[in-house]
Length: 310
Image: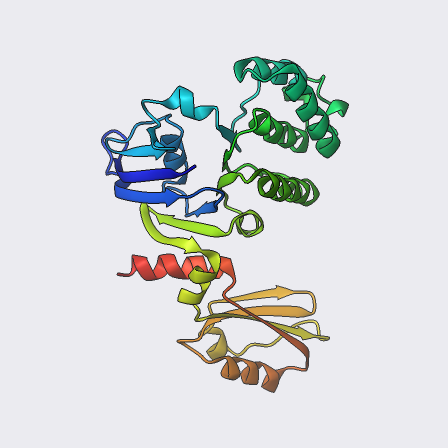
């Protein structure tokens, strides 16, 4: 199983092309996180991949079949979740939606019963599956959407902002489930999210887009190692606040205050680690220092800023 974008060009009517001669390859069992600011082209890329919109130039091949001409054949192998819209029927019981999907995907009675029993054991669906979708909480709806995307046993999962608005506990439970599920079923995953923790938890590769231009495509570790000048240092103290001189503050990228802890972020090309620590220690009573380099959010910002300035 492989997905190939071949020399894609696409733009909405009367607008400059979002993608121009774009090529990208997703291999079997890979898990890709697609990142970028609003307008980067993430959702457009997914809609082209699913055959919802057609590129003006180029082809998108899934299993060597053109998605636009073989959509009915291909789509049965894909499970989709849209974070901002539902794939289930709004006014009927959730279980009725699942039964319709059973018929649409021609799932046998035995397979359907087995899968529903499994998903119920994971998410306790039977507690609310007789209710209309519109009556469910956000967390319950997210669970039903995930199950709907998996009911027909697809080998490709395409999730566009699937965890929007979820509380931490629900989000963590769903992510743990998806990690285990993708590993067991050897699924390919393509995920877009504004929450970098989602990407870090579920994906091992990153496609970073900026206005349709791929700034990076590869392993997370490679992204961080290529942009390794960022540092994050947490200073822990007993006082109510941490003093940072105006001179030092001007050389830092960010300063974040917590209770009895202050985090500073800086670029090693502007100021050295030892200088930052020495300056803070000179003016404060510090009881602990924690360091972290190459944290994903700051690395991504740095990649985009560097490329925008070229």
